[in-house]
Image (cartoon, rainbow, N blue to C red; front, side):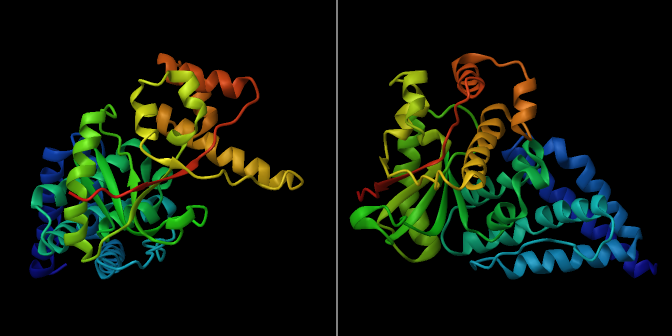
Length: 312
């Protein structure tokens, strides 16, 4: 490596460290992924194959900023799966300053921009690259998700076909990041602040909020009671009719159940699988209740909900 190339590589690593420092101030769990990401950056400094794959992955991600284009896999040219995953994680973090700049240029405060992209190290720390999925992580990099206070909002979605008069209307998706209790006052604040920021980002207005989540399974009300934060959150939405698989198609029914139950393991227990969740010691009404329901042969289901966007 020439001195000039070495200096450039060192500068790239320094840039990644600076990005991680900024993320750490927003999301403390960045510390969990800091060492492996910096280690991969240092490997790229001295390995031209890894460096080239990293450059291509970052270019792929930055080209998707502001679009609805799906990135798919990253660093596919690397034959070793572990190296491929490590480079993908590094590329996602490396692209975050460009993502923030694009969002800020459209009138979103810098603080909101960095809070939004902090979901990348958070998800990597809690669920890992494959437990989260590159689709979601690259969508955050592309500026499709804003974190406003307690909630996340996804731009450019549509009301599901079962949404009655609102079916097919422009909507903003609602997601719940892993950042603490689902406090009703904090949710009120997020819903109040988000429309202006989303309109600044997209230049368009949406008619409705949409949410697809296990949190909307109405049986949680019987488990937790009407005053529970989860139940009060679900009450914000009009529950759409359940999409029930054909009972004659046993494979479809099994997949439908398995996907929703796996989501319970992931989001209630922070586990990579339902089997892992079952091995953990359940604490609190929610964990104890969802496992008791599963142990009795029941299932949990993701449900769709819609709510109109209130205008001030």
